[in-house]
Amino acid sequence: MAEKKIPHRVCTPVCAPCILGFRLLPPPDGVVIVTLTTDFGTSDGYVAAMKGTMLGIRPDVRMIDVTHAVPPQDIMEAAWVLRQAAWTYPEGTVHLVVVDPGVGTTRRPLAARFRPTGSDREHLFVGPDNGLLSLLTDEPPSRAVVLDRPEFWRTSRASRTFHGRDVFAPVAAHLAGGATLRELGSVTEETSSLRWPLPIADAQGVEGSILHVDRYGNCVTNIQRETVEAHQADRSVKVYAGSTIIRGISETYGHAAVSEPLALFGSSGALEVSVNKGNASQLLSLSRGAPVRLIFETRSERARRFAEAA
Image 1: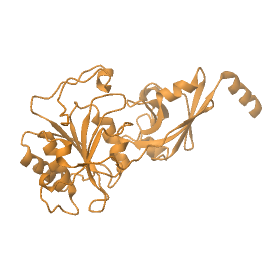
Image 2: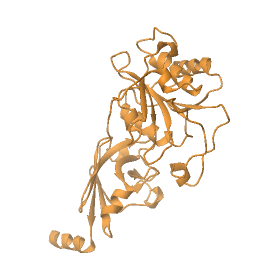
Image 3: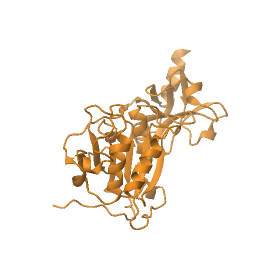
Image 4: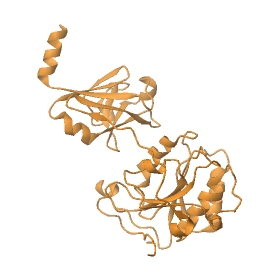
């Protein structure tokens, strides 16, 4: 059976951008978007070399930088950043992801088709088979191939240290030009898998951890709004983060006094520990992996606790 080539179209109503109140329009006919996410930085020529390689294959490709500021070799950080951005793009977008601490080893080069959780809008991803791609959605790939066809590479003698230029960028350009996954490599059913740490929720509260610290120092956790709402009922909540105790969950950063800590649900739906006009990570000594705990209390439970303390 011939492999389905994904056309660009207006997205389905279940996609996140539509839920937020706007719709994605398809790019002009024949134009495919390729996003780039790397840990290369911008002081060297690595990103430019990948872009030049793609333009040499597909001069009309539309390239968009997600980020090149991922900390070196930080797979989890790259996955977090790309997961927030990738699914806002039109169906059929090609995402080139090169955070590759295992470059030149036995780790396999991969291209795969994924869709976001709860949607049928498929995107294409190109990068190393190191588990990063598995963190982008809760869904398994609908198809994955090992990139073992050197005729689609920049050169059959690919550099042992720069697969981004010699393997991944050419493959992304060929996908943008209409090549199918089956043409580019051998189908595989086995791909490396990683998982985000999950929160633990019960009647007393929710225990989670910090997954990401953004540029402002906001500490984003793995505790989702729906998890809290499913267990909180009409009780108040206290948030424990490091040595800091925060009473209640705010609606905006400005609901706390300047330089005061707060907790709120951010744009991703996850609980954040923040400081109004300050850097929570620095001021509260919090970093990725730090535990965050929510405790629920009724008014009578609080009164009893205060009475016992007295």
